[in-house]
Image (cartoon, rainbow, N blue to C red):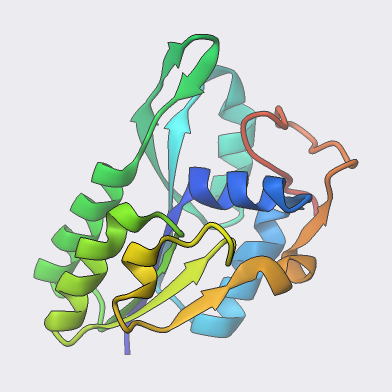
Length: 176
């Protein structure tokens, strides 16, 4: 059975941060691999030119990065990757690249994607970064959802520790 993991990077990062955790991406990738044995793990993320060292380290951890061009709006970096994630999952579905998939998000905008895959008899699991922030538009789809709130300690670290090679306002940690 072929499984692919698709990660809404901003949703994962922001939810963990709100709960007081900094995702250790190396540990998270290892945890995903042990739990789901994916053939590929895609991380959808806004591209910030000053973070190239961080992106390189993510790739060294085994993530396949899919970037979205970012813009600065009122001093805040914006780069929503929802459309890119939906397009990649849909493309992989039609190319029969997976039999099951894991989507890491709590964003209700992905409700239609989850419903599409479920109707096509694809086994879908949602890993929602936060139980509190998981949209009803995902929860009402009768799809298994695992909430990461209780699991962050397996692959995260305390927010007080500085991430090497990464601006903490952009992502998280890569240290082991």
